[in-house]
Image (tube, rainbow, N blue to C red):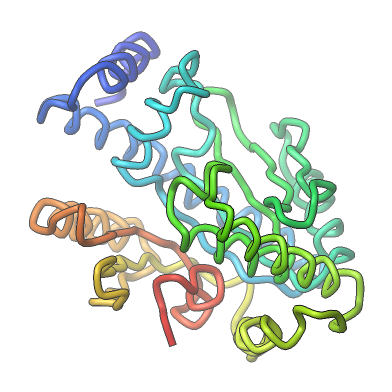
Length: 293
């Protein structure tokens, strides 16, 4: 069943105003599934474009989790947003090595897609803030967000996500912001070609771990497999990472397994995600939070 625009808008309003009913959660799941083919198609297009341009990259795709969609709808800053206008129900994360590769990747992705909005460019924000470029591809009702980050920008974003939703939304504690400011200065230095500075000894080891994973020989431009990742947020441990074939049937199996996991695990204790990537090794760089050393 394909939901109409009005049905989507009404569903979004109900999710904003009250605890979600079982019926509305089922509708939301149905709505998310409508994006699935689009995510796989855009993943292939983006991977092919960046690979053909000779740019070294890692790519992972994801569908936004149910609780994340509802949380975003209920944010005060998003009080005028309706579900049909949410650009990041599904999204891609493209990681490249440096700012030159980042701009090259942005250019080739834009040339390869007829329907693309003007990018959201966060590269010039202060060092202690999120820095990346977001592209929104596709027709208005089925958009896909593509985040293009340098490896250093990605290191900062991952650290911010580890502090939780409040920090991610721009309201960290003073101590958290102090840490992010220092890390941000280090990351700006890396992208500027320097690893010197007072924070280098604090962060260089973590950057080198990501860099090692990024530069390890891996297949690029290949089919995207689906992975269901189950992570215990209380113990900070990966519970399992289940791989599914890079076929439509494999994707459906992954979504069914994801749904089973979500229905049997407490969302206050576990994160369950469906991610798309060419390999688990790539996921360890694109989503390091879920693969602790």
